[in-house]
Amino acid sequence: MTQSKLFALASLIAAGLLGSAAAQQQPPAAGGPPQGQQQGQQQGYSGPGQPGGTVGGPPAPVVFVTSVEVLRSDRSGGLDVVRVRGLVTGQSWSQPHLIPITQGSPRDGMLDLIFQASAPAGAAALGPFMPVEAILPVETGHPYKGVRVRGGNNAISLKTIPGFAEVPAPKEDCAKCIGKFFVAKGGNPPAGATADNTVREADLPYMLRVIKPADGIPSYTLEPNRLTLLLSEDGRIVDGAWD
Image 1 (spheres, rainbow, N blue to C red):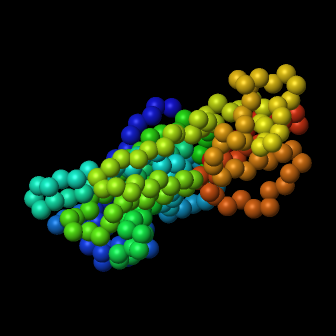
Image 2 (image 1 turned 120 degrees about the horizontal axis):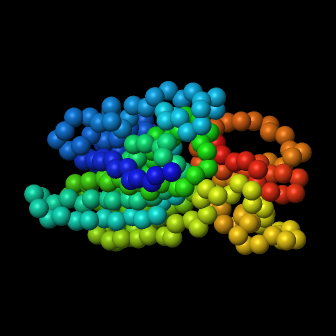
Image 3 (image 1 turned 180 degrees about the horizontal axis):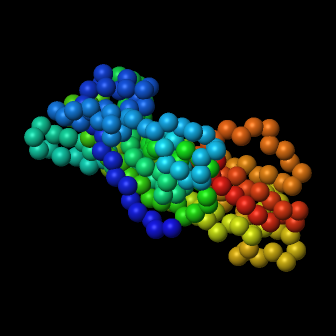
């Protein structure tokens, strides 16, 4: 799978625009037309019956946020630009963007954002994570002292503006999990297993569903950031998906 970077632009121009977060739409760019077609409109969600990796599901948080940066410009009245990088589970994600969830002036001085993108409409095959990024300009005179960005499995807080904060990317994306032994937290690898042919639950910091041969599945609600692993009788991973 070829990795590429997606890029999206959103603007925060007034406290009143923050209410649009509830509608999961991008605020319009300063002085420009609404971005509804680019960021807000998504194709209808068709559920797990869609082919694996089909684009067109509803917006969902990215699987992991890796860095938050705020750049400051003093030109033309001043502008702070929030730049966020993260990871999605595959190339079927699109339109990454930042959604403000802060209302008014927060007590802790933090601008709270959700980093999300248009998710696949159905279960997606295992594969390498893809880096994505989005930016959010914030006009001068805002009340914020820092920025907190939340993804599906983590959050990063930047407490100085301008500034930069990052965390290491997860060491395991499960792109090569099939055929390896699964070792649950607190468990030991089976006899004959090596570091190269085992996958440890401790290295999978995501929502995880492990299905053993005798397990039922009480429901199948699509969750694009949930990693599902099917195990064989001997504890090997025989199939998997992000669903």
